[in-house]
Length: 120
Length: 163
Image (tube, rainbow over all chains, first blue to last red; front, side):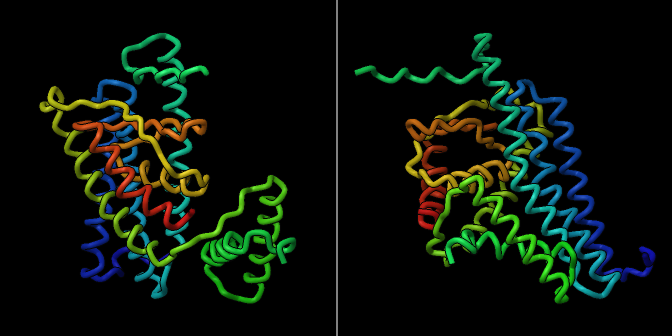
């Protein structure tokens, strides 16, 4: 692998900028995990890192390695696709587990009960 | 035809994924990718994965563009909420129950991905008996506004594509 110093300035600046944006969003998400109050609120915080955060880091990676190897490096697109498809699975699993527990324990955080269907 | 190639679109996608993963278009890569795609489609056929017909593919790029714009906008909004805890008192989060007209499982999966990919909204539950879904919104100002956003901005266009 070639060295980072071989990257020209016009490419190094956007790569560094994108990396900082991605890292900053991941940091904001982590801060949210600590500071937000309810479990359902905290569920939203890491999605910052899994959407635009990972997106900008992947674009930075594509840019960096495409310029270093002087060919298009595109397989980061796959990481993005798999992230988009798998994140909802984890979030739904967590949210529904919390929902089930809250309904059982009668916590006020739980959503209003469904209106029970009318029996004919 | 139907027996040997039950899911043409998925098979083609799998071949493209394989070529992208190996970063080569050599004959060997194409052959191996085709073999893997056939195996994958065969596995899907075994579990009786529901077939679908994609319609109005012309509206897909516009939808993707709107998703990307929305991802940027909502990332910004949620980051502001997290980094400014002083205004936490004014913010209210909560659940919204949204009645959906879409029944296609593929369309619902796409809607889940869109809503989860935009921070601030998480798809929590779906009740297939009456077709309502439960959405958790981080910054909930108006329940009816969210029902309109989900139905008009995303559901109607996904129904054009998947149903």
